[in-house]
Every structure is written in C-alpha cells, then in structure tokens.
Amino acid sequence: MKWETIASENGYRRMRVEADWSSIADDYEYIVSENEKARVPGFRPGKVPRPVIEQRLQKQILEDLSQRVAKRLLREALRDADVEPMGPVELTDISCSKKKPFQFTVSFLTMPDIELPDLGSLAMRDDSSDPRDIISQRLLELVSFNIPAELVRAEFGSDDSDRGKESAEWKAAVDRVRLMLILKRIARQEGIEVTEADMERRIREKAIEFGLTPHALGAELEEGGGMERLKDMLLAESTLDYLVEKISVS
Image (cartoon, rainbow, N blue to C red; front, top):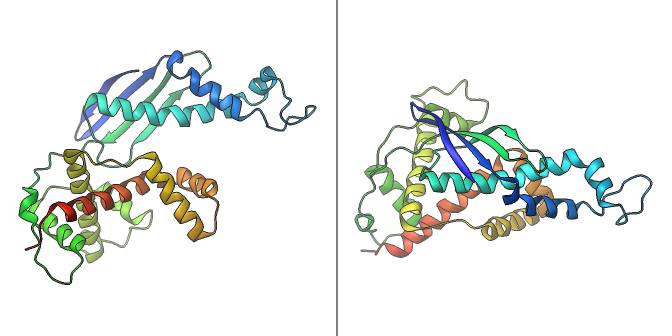
C-alpha cells in the first residue's frame, strides 16, 4: 500500500491511496466464496460454477470488495501518515477492477493541535455526581480550541437553519464536539482503541434492543455513516472509563 498527499490547506487534507492487487486478492477470493450459494437461474444453490458467479455477480463482488478493503487501507494510510481526521472522512474516485491496483481519494479535516492538561489535575471530589460528568466538565474548562462550524452542524443533521451560533443548542453542540475531540486525543496518547469485537458486541446489544438482527442493524449503520459515530461513542466511553480509574478521588 502507498499513499501521497495531493492537497493540504486550511485544515483540509486530501490523500490518494493505492494498493497492488496482490494485497487484496485474498479479500476478493473470500467475497467470491461468500457468493457461492447465491441463486443463479439455471443452477442449483451451491452448484454454480465459479466463472458464472464472477461473471453474473461481478458488479456486486467489486462493490463488496471496495467496502471491505477501503476501510483497512484507510486505517493503514492514516497510521503511516501519522494524521488523525477531526471528523468524518469522504472517499471519492474509487477505482476497483479485478487484477488491477485498488485506488481511492480520501478527504478530511485534520485534528487540530490540542494541548492536553496533566491528567492528574482532573482529580475529583467525592460527591454524588457521576464521575464521568465531572471529568467531562473539567476537560471542557481546561482545553480550548476552535471547532469548524461544519462539525457542529453535523450534530444537528440537515435541519439546523433555525439554530444561530449564539443559541444554547449551538453552544451545547460545540461542547459535545469539543469533548469528543479531546477524548480522541487522550485515547491516542494513552493507547486506547476500539476493536472490531467491541463494535460487534455493541451492535448485537442494540439489535436486541431494537428488535433487529445484527446484520440488519449493521447495514443501516453502514448506509448512514453510523459506524463511525458508533466507534466514536465507544471510544469516548472507554476513555472516560479509563480516566475514572486513573484519576484519584479526593
């Protein structure tokens, strides 16, 4: 896998990522094997010749391949470049063809320089308040930096026309975004990560709560960009739990 920065200005960065076919061939084989039981007219399920599967389902196979490998390559490229997105990333110009290099462009806002306080300075007083709330408030008091308006608008979805930047709703959204970014930076500093197993576990729990199958809920999250939001939420929870354990109560 290789990458290059093709634009970097005003806090935005665009990178072009490329991987040789040999590095994703196993992913292609896995996806083809997953489609071996597909229903194809004229053949019994499970008895469809591989060339027929590849010919009839090539578009879907390549779409699945793109989704599968783009996430992995994106993580690798960001790690190699030692850069962290501030918010959602956008993938464009995806090129995926059998036995050819896989390519895509990723665009994102880069994480600002966040000067973290000494975590020991967050020591809590022993009272009835939720320690997570106390730590969150202390972090917001101690760490200040500018938040791009587009990240705040994303908190409201598409309907933010009646929310001025001086409104209570806007200011609360700024605090939520700022806290999430602070916790992300702490997580990176302390080596806290969210694993695929963590994601799958929470999806299973929420699927039971909503009366859905884990697969159906996962598909909904993928379509709406919910996977990244879920990952951010789990990372925030894990980081706050870590801070609660680390910080002494006085």
